[in-house]
Image (cartoon, rainbow, N blue to C red; front, side, top):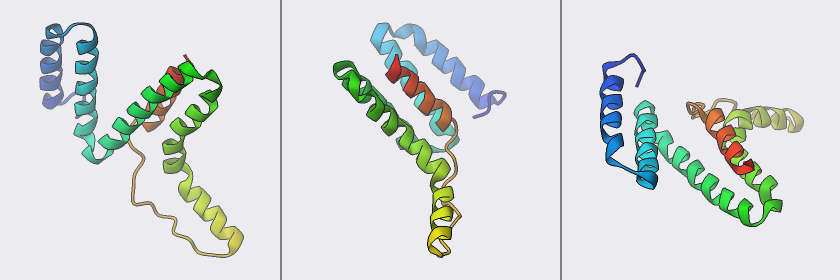
Length: 128
């Protein structure tokens, strides 16, 4: 959904119309759900990745709150999807070169929209 499209105008109007209906925590949940709808509009198969990262970030923050020494592990788990998507082909290519194999260098996936932003926002949430 592009920002200058009629679909976005309708989506934004519906979101803003629904916002006053909720208070406090319900408003946060409503905003999150609308954010997921907005993200899924682009490419729905990546929605589970976003949901999974959200859940991991939430439980990671709870874990870090109870045991601050686990922050490096929580950050590493948060970085894992980004590292996999961005660097798996690079790693395969280099491992293949080291062992003399011609490993596949094409990916069946694309970099999910905003994955870096989401990852680093979650890390900021964990650290804060």
